[in-house]
Length: 497
Image 1 (cartoon, rainbow, N blue to C red):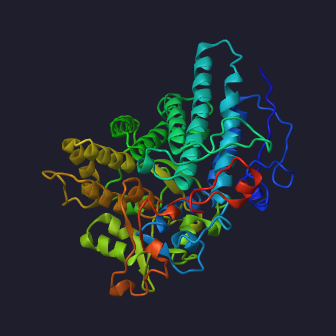
Image 2: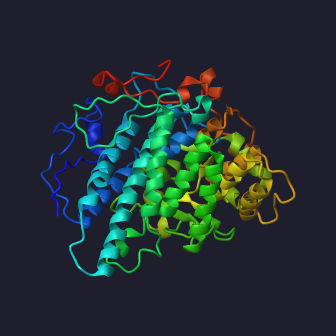
Image 3: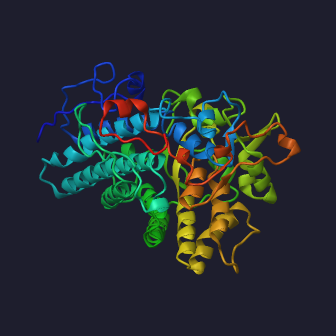
């Protein structure tokens, strides 16, 4: 069995401390060089667990990725100008003060997934029995599939944070740097176009999906208990792939992937929460609707820097719902999603992260990333754009009726605006809004609406460009961090920064 020498890159907290260095700096102050070896599949799973821990960081899906996508839109805003999310909400970053956290965290993840992807096939089964050989192959494929799916997610996030929406210019703008090997400080890549990044992302995911096992396929191997919960699975990878196709404007494949995933996931035991289950489901872990969630424990979580605590009226109160969004939700107070916010001190707070099973509270809440509801909404949106109203009605109606059983879209012509309205209701607080509007060529309009119950809620002082904008406003993409530009002569800055 081949011994594999590797570099273990420390979690992102260590990388942030070395913010003066470039994104691949392996100086001892920011990383640990380890003479180690990956001899067994359990060693690779250990490496993957470290990757999941990095994803859990408040610099990524522990908090920042969610609130970036929300506060840059029109449904969620910063509580005050002193809050963590205020600079994102106000589009206050420039080329000199841009945060490096997204860039560093995603490339830390990509580097470590490369270790798994490029080496795991060298591990071979040494037994003679066919059953053991089969279980070994399923285990190995699943681990590789997880790594591929996570690498795809990290590159997708880099691309949509730093590159303009695909449909703005057919992917011609610059996205991220594509890194597929374990590289060191001497590596000075150029940014690839958004189109090139999407090609890679789709390639990673189409390779990952057949490798990833469903829960039923995993059988009774010793690795079963370790591998099911809190990990990327086939259905989460297919959900991400349907989302990527939707962002790219490939609606035929977006619909096909969503339909295949719905059918397979429901056969595997997943389903939409019912109307009666909806509110309480957010306080439970590993429910029927969630394919993949960031798992937080009392002893292992971002704590008070987590999205739950930042949203909470009893926490840091970083972000609140806008008055215009509360006004939108009030059009149907019988919709179960109207219950997913709480009014306190004249402001509306998101209630999607209460903590699991009554333990720990919002500071330790799990964070759902991929839900079967997204598949239904992706399918409905793609069907609208393909002018297949029958399918648009079929998939959207499941979400509409779940929200309020007396409502329906049957007998109507479903429009894109109608689908996006349901996405607003379903995903607020989950980081989708700004991306959903801009990828469709829409306009974000931030306005105040007078509502006595939240009379203390008003948009903060905003520059004109942050009050109403579309994908042509240059600040809808982040600037490449200054440290990266300074360290790499091949790294090109985004226009107008």
